[in-house]
Structures are given as C-alpha cells and as structure tokens.
Image (cartoon, rainbow, N blue to C red):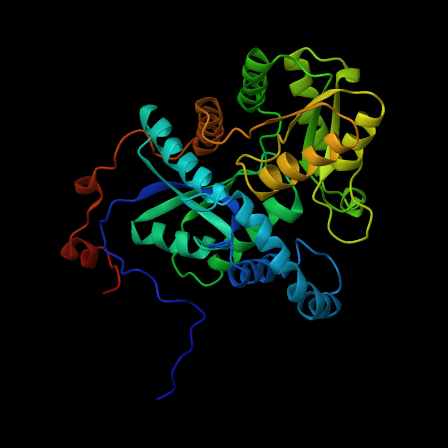
Length: 368
C-alpha cells in the first residue's frame, strides 16, 4: 500500500462545535535566554541568519557569519547583555510580557473577549510555538501586532515571514490579519509626548532633545522601505506635540552593523558633535523601541552617555521607553480595536448555537 506523504505538521485535535476564539499575538524581536556566551551565540546565529536582516548573498554571508562573527562577537555581546540583565531576566522579555498582559486587560475592559499572547521572532517564545498554542486553545482568528511602530522589512516583514512559514505547514488555518505600522497613530504620539513631559516636569528641559531610532542600511530606503520616512514622521509629530522648533531636536539612527552606509545621522557622532559645539545637556529617547532593551539601556544609556560626557557635555538624560505605560497600552489597544473590526469579539460565542450533532452532520452529508 502506498503511503501518501503530507507536508502538514500534526495539529491539535479538532472538536466539532468547539468555541471559535479570537486572539491578538503581540510580537517583538527576541532576546537570548541568558547573558551567557553560548546563549548569545545561539540567538545571534538565528537573528543574523535572517535574510531580511542581512541582505548579502546567502553563501557569502553565512561564511562571514559562521567563520568570523559568531567566533568573536558573542562574548562581547554577552558582556553587554550582562550589564543590563535583571534578576527577573531580560528587560525586553519582561516588558513585552507585561505589555501583552495589560493589553488583554485593556481589551477585555472594552468588552473584547480575546486572548492576547506574546511571541518573539528569534529565540524562546517563538512565533510558531505561540501560534500552535493559540490553535490548541481553539483560536480561529489571529491579529498580529508588531511591537515596532515603524514598518521595516528587517523587522515587521520578518515577523510576517515567520507567520507565513508556520502557515505553510498548517492544514486548518485561522483567519489572519496584520498590523503594518502605527508610527503616526495619535494615541502612540500622545503617549510619547506625555512621557517626555513627565520627565521634563521632574528634571527640567534640555538644550537638545535627541530622538534615536534603530538604524538600517541606507540602500533599504532607495529600494522602497518606508522605515526612514516613518521615523521622521514620528519625530515631526512628536516635536509638534511638544511644541519644539526644528532647532530644538534632532533625529538620529543607532546600532550600525558592518561598514556599509546606514541611515544618517548616526547617534553617537551626533552627540559628540553637540557636546563639542557647547551643548551642555541633552535628553535622549528611542521612540522606535516599545521596550527598553540592550540597544537602549546599554548602547544609549551607557555608551552614548559616556561619549557625550567625555566630549565635554555636562548632563545626559535618558528618557525610558514606553514599556508598560498605561497610555501606550491604551494606544496598542486602540490599534488592535481598529484591526479587529468585523470579527465577533464583543460577546462570547454561543457554543450551543454553533454545535452540530453527529446525526445532523450526517444528514447534511458531512464526511464521517
């Protein structure tokens, strides 16, 4: 007897008449499981193997990655992770899990009976694992909400790739919707503005506000990626909400990797130039990061701080990411509500009304 091979992975058992459910999957980039060199190496290997992240000919890049980068970078990166690690674990994972939990509370307070889970693109809590868990809970509709307000192929599209890869192996797919961006959503801008205003109420105003976004190669802009434009729009709207003139703030890009030209101006050289020009105090924030992480806590609040002060600056203030700020959670909730429109989330589904007995199913000609 010839066996028919199937490309589909085993799925949770299906029960006719089970309650169809709606879920929100809140997705962030990911983090190593610990600040050990081994865990950081595993994380970097997965992250830097993503062709969305590094757009270099595959074979050449894998030779560079495994022959050079993964031999030397993990130990250095592990030391940086160790400098920001908490007793509870990775800051990014802590904040992401709290955001997801509070988002579910917010949506339920609005009458939406939905599940909210969080997933990571790389490392633990993988996208496929969390989507499998949602299917096991009877979820038939999933809204994917990135933790990235600004769209980039390197981040947002990579999340979607992971969903599509999972979907290609699933027989009974849930309905899927995706949030591309919310870089100019009024509630997101208001949450950013209020976080800055609270900081200024406590510490006074700076000579310059620096808005540092994660960098990407400049070629992505010329290839049509909207990320650069969306970062600048976020910055402009935030400056308007704060009443700042163009001379009172700067937009910069951080976290450059390799020797190629990335989006400019670069954050650290800009801070050094400001200090050398006589600017005494800067406040730095990272509007594109929804959660404090290595790039904000170590790269900005440690390395960039030291560079500014060493160059002659006198005061460096880091304004924390929105993290689990109630206004940001509400902004995520508003975004989710808009994209959930049309799905039955307001009241629990009546299981009895949907249930079809075996006899009824046979009478309707359903397969046994």
